[in-house]
Length: 266
Image (tube, rainbow, N blue to C red):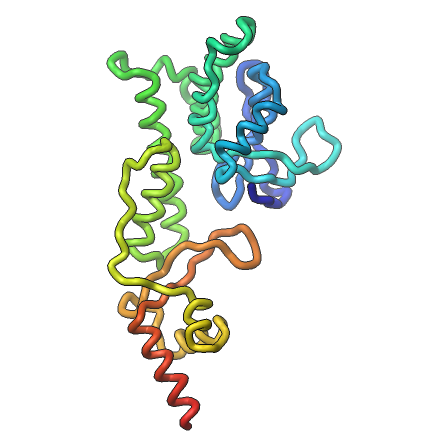
């Protein structure tokens, strides 16, 4: 689970639902949901559900420092990616909870993520219930799966549009990983890399120089093109943010190596 701080301008959006308030948080332009209000709104025990979230959804959770309404200070709040919320909701089995909680659990399963998604995309709820728009020939499970895929696809589009230099291959990887993760199955096969690529740090280790020097040489020789590698999305070395980085192929390494040799001779 990662830690993340957001600015006050990204304060949580209040989303009324079933007599309670739920919240949405913008984390690096991705919608995340503080989970304790949802769990308690369903009448479930937060401690046991938090343990379950950490075990099964840890890679999709972040700890975000925010101040929720009715609180007097900023706190670290456990948030789950909105695109993974349907998977968690349907991990709860209504027939195994107390009878007095069953209706609330089913209500959350049927409508909670729909309401949150509409608030995230439209700023309001335009449909009273999933039930009112669900075609009779489609089961709720199939509808949920299709919408989870749609949510993941839209999130992937936002990411790819934010980073103009990403290669087609990198975009395919982003779409495959996000869609597959949203439904916990491999719907889209990951593309196969035809040529091995290396990060600036790996190239630096091979040639005995720093990664920064590799970057400077690559910029000077205009190597950051399709001929010499690909742009990919990677985690920043200094934060949890995703950043655009260039990975070098063997042809680029040969060019950089020859450049270094020629500099030494000169």
